[in-house]
Image (cartoon, rainbow, N blue to C red; front, side, top):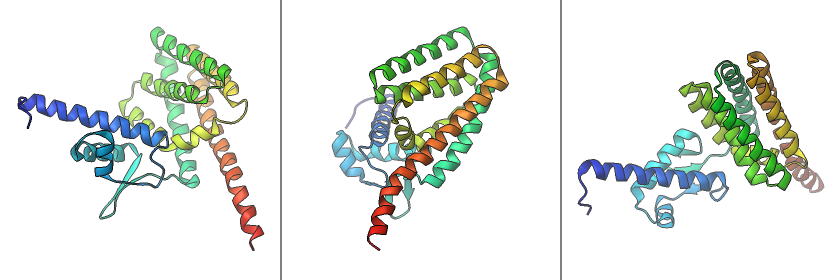
Length: 236
């Protein structure tokens, strides 16, 4: 039993829960915990080398971020996002992106602009190397930073939940041949509009960018469904 003073013990517990949450989030986003999979607290605790308490708290927090769902009397499951739900999420995300772009174009500071340019440089380098994982990370950071720099905490909270829910779809849509370099150019145009203070232009470009991602998601879903439809037809 710990001899740490109460306040320190609470801090240690919260810090451990946060570490567990981050690792579980990584495992979900990396596909190590598959969509629809039922999560076992004890198994996860043993895997991470912690007690069940931090795992339980971390799973509750992940439910708030949209990565897992809690079902009464059934347990905890990794969320599955249907194409229809993803379609709705993309539409909402496009609206949030547009709002963030408008706000940021009117308030962006030099150091924020410099950080965004550095992120685009990382995207360029990853595209040259055909590094999809590196590009994915930089792409997420670019859009997250846009919303973060817009300065609306509620907007950022909502946006991050939507991004979590779309994470699996977004990896696939960015994996198309030559898509990385084209995507980098799109981000450069967005940042140029923001840097120029063009609020309407930046907002419109970001909305268009998100809706184009939605269309790529539909194209990907169609290519995945097509072979299954052919197999079903051949069995009829």
